[in-house]
Image 1: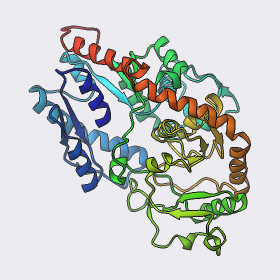
Image 2: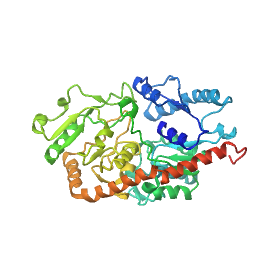
Image 3: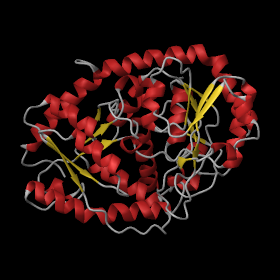
Image 4: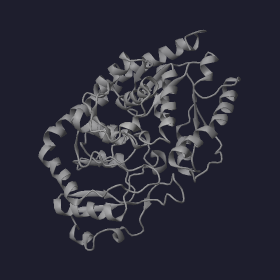
Length: 427
């Protein structure tokens, strides 16, 4: 959000921006990063941390977290504008237009609206389709999509209502800013514009290229337990290719469902015996990795990624092709888009699935499957790498003066300023 705020401020001298920050846990590193971003026309307000119940299911934990923050957001907004507001709905009745920043891609936004449409218009819950062998035509994707790639959070009866509520809220917005750019997702953006969604503004790629501490980047859940680690190690050794491996210890979800991986005191305890000696001079194992610095290094040829949207955009920005191994959230659909629709990635295991919070792996991906993915990098590498380099150039041009995202952001600012002085509009 801070990066987007700075872009908006650059385009209009009368804009000022206040960012409300919700934190799960105290984080001094994040506080320092936020302090470094404070400027004359941008202000950060740290909301108090309400009591949360960590023994809840993951979906209920998130729902509870949002609900307990609503009065805090309401009070902060009251202090800012001197009259009561609440999240997303009430500002519209008070004459204040609501614009949403959507941090995932346009294609997944289309998927959320597709799932909502099934529920509201056809009385079909998308989790009822999870065992179907049918591939589904979703307007924001060029190709039919298998239900095996649908996000786990939307395939559970207890969490789908939360996701549908979010999608309804998005439909009520005056506009949706999406962290993408036209050249990457032209089909998805067009499909949203042709549907019943609010106006969409592709303003990306919005990336934090200036600070790379672990706190500033946010947490990743991408870690594996011992059995899977051994399979990865065997695949790397058998492939014979050089590697840099960020190996981290999974948290104990029974203690904290939102905990993040940590570095091992001694990573050799989960590796095959003798692995470090046999791969000495070929590979290197580290803990937390400065991802941007690594992606920007000329020696990096490929990036094995879980396909979070931010990591996907970073990979494109630096022109590094992806070997896709998604885990949770919308990562399977991001991998599908990168591999099947854009040709910017190769597959390791696209339909691998694991909850992002508090669950074990459903399956162990074999060393043979992983090695096959590594070898496909070499066999398909030149064509994929060429496409990624071309998209990298387009991502940078999109943000330049006159580029697609720069022009869209300017249009967004004009629309916001015009709507601020509109006394009535459809609600």
